[in-house]
Structure formats: C-alpha cells, structure tokens
Image (cartoon, rainbow, N blue to C red; front, side):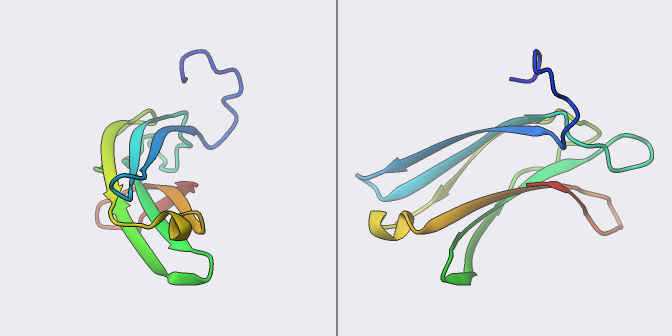
Length: 116
C-alpha cells in the first residue's frame, strides 16, 4: 500500500479492515497501518493515533468511541489493532457512519488534527 504509491502530496493513507457478522451482530474494525501522514510538529516527527466514532446520522451524540495506541515519532505507524462494536442489529447498522480521525499526540499540549 505505502511503498509504491505515487501521490505523496496528501495528508496520508490508512489501511483498515471492516467486517459485520450477521451471526453475532458485531461490527469489527481493524486499523492496520497508516503511511505518508502529514508532519504537524516542527521537528517533523509525529506521535499518531486514530480515534474511531460510530454514530447514527439522526443521533450525533450517540457515539461509540475507540482509540488506537499512540505510535511515537513516526509518520508511517503500524497499529494492527482490532475493535468490536457489539450487538448492533443490521437494520440499525446500515444507518450508521464510521468516522476515523488521525491525531498527533503532543504530550502536555493539545492534540493536533492530522486528518480523517
């Protein structure tokens, strides 16, 4: 995904895997890795992490959130983390939106938005 991509003038790319199980009514999200993340800090190093929000368009406050671990000093983090949204009926699931946002964790400061 990242090694041979030509257009690196973006905010970055993220590789994810998604699966919904009819049997268990669970939604599985795996954040595999990201690459070419935009450097936000002056030292050109970032401490990226991803925040996941699953919400209904009619209930914006009804969010289910997860966060990946913070990967220190990299613009090409390997996350390999799986998250499970449990017991979501299919007819409700199809009305939901998954938003994945990438932030740079600045210890002792406010986090910087990288992209979504």
